[in-house]
Length: 175
Image (tube, rainbow, N blue to C red; front, side, top):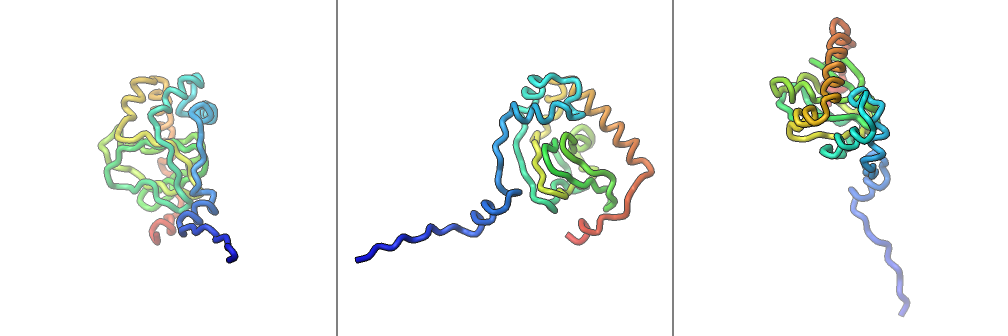
């Protein structure tokens, strides 16, 4: 009797995950992330060791291009830092900013009234670090320079947004 070798069966989602780089998680060590983000505005003036310490509470999350990460209006308690990729920031359907590596979002809902002031959509595969459950206040208390940098960045954003908007993002409305 002749024995045949059978090919192992994969389910569809496993095939999609293995063939699409944006779905495959890449393990980043905290030290590598700290080095990558040490020059980011949020961590300006912080030693790499302090950045690594600040990142210990963050979770690693990935989003495919086109995915809505946060939606304007609902309450939110997560704070995001972009590691790689780009995202569009939309207010009332108008593009107000593009975020890239080292940028962050979600701070207004956490430190303000809890309501998301903008929608954010991944424009390219996006790798973010997420500080969940409103832990941003504790991060600021533990790392005061991060708090100062966050305030400076938010003030700069408000100045940039005042009076400058691009046409509505039709892609978000149709999604």
